[in-house]
Image (cartoon, rainbow, N blue to C red; front, side):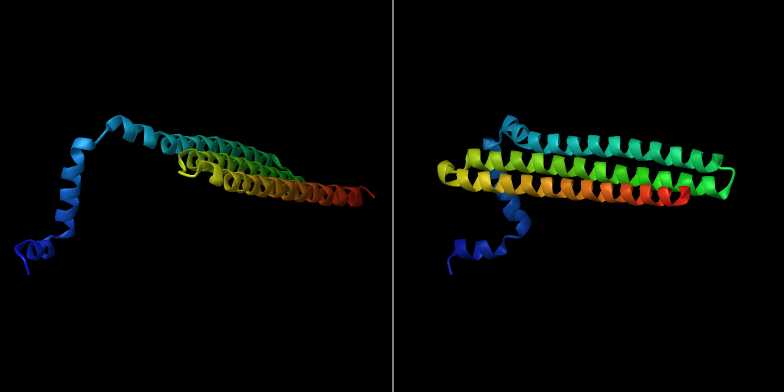
Length: 167
């Protein structure tokens, strides 16, 4: 075994990483790294903004429900307050899920666009990209329709029970 071959087996993973870093250091371009990280930072910021807004909405719905329950003087009023709170929570959940899905699909579309733009066979990947984006949009629409139907069903059940009580 040559001296060079024997040296290769003595390297630790850390030495290999250090060598790779030192070899690549002169080619490091901070501007390019920042440009590459920007889409990920923008995506994280969008999720943080959405989560913060949804948390504030949830807090407001909870506070309203708490005040409504606290103000109830009889069991029937408390039950109605609880029911209204449940309906508000379901509507908020559906809205939040739609917003989250929309953000996910938008970010998926952007990622597919970026891949398509940098793909070596741009024209060949174009049809695949179009189908991927269409599938994601269809999934978003299907989820939205299911949530709308669920909300409509919940509202019809609520109105049916109100009609029975009045009879």
